[in-house]
Image 1 (cartoon, rainbow, N blue to C red):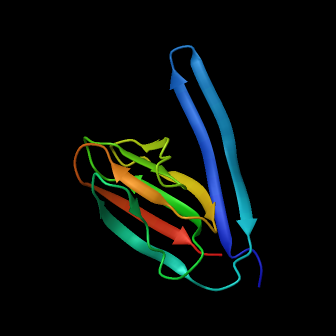
Image 2 (cartoon, rainbow, N blue to C red; image 1 turned 90 degrees about the vertical axis):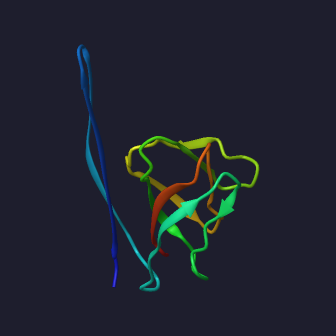
Length: 119
């Protein structure tokens, strides 16, 4: 089998004179073993937490901060969480590969949906 994972992304912004239109791009990737989907919706507290992908390589990860007020920082190295999941549920897609995914809520525990397509 081939091309079991399909990643689709695009971006459109229209705000007054600002117009950005990145057409949708589709990328297909091979998956060696049929695993993934989890870990699901997690309660992320205000201390760094490493996401457990249950003994699999995380590969592509889709995250959504489901909290309406507070943001969550994330990164691949402890102590270096320089990226942000804003409040409100906008999806973020990243490639974790063989690394770890670390999350930390800013000021209150947040529910974060984490879904992986394991490689």
